[in-house]
Length: 171
Image (cartoon, rainbow, N blue to C red):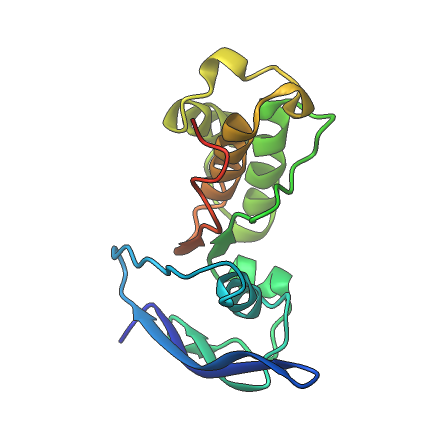
């Protein structure tokens, strides 16, 4: 059984059909790429998967569980992680603090025994931001901000990680 299964998903915005019967299956440990021109519906599909956009028809299944009626928060707790096309960071916080928010939230609902401070330090090293760990995010270039967002997502230990335009702004 696929870890993530998207089956015949369609989304309409008024008379505009943004997604038309999209189906994708991804297995655990697999990297699946979604490529298309601007306006093709990639972000809309990610929004449907994470619960930020309602679908018109179809199904989204994670680990055998239908997600249609679940909130974005519940979907995240089931293991969906995400980065955004437009950066969604806490600009006045440091790199370390941005990642700590995610590590603390993950610990609060997962029952994980991991120390959030250690998770944060591991993620800072994993994404290569040790030299700017205490810098405010709003002072960093876009490429480093993308890495902060990646580290923050990884701190939640997602089963599935959706990366929307991950190379945008990278050097």
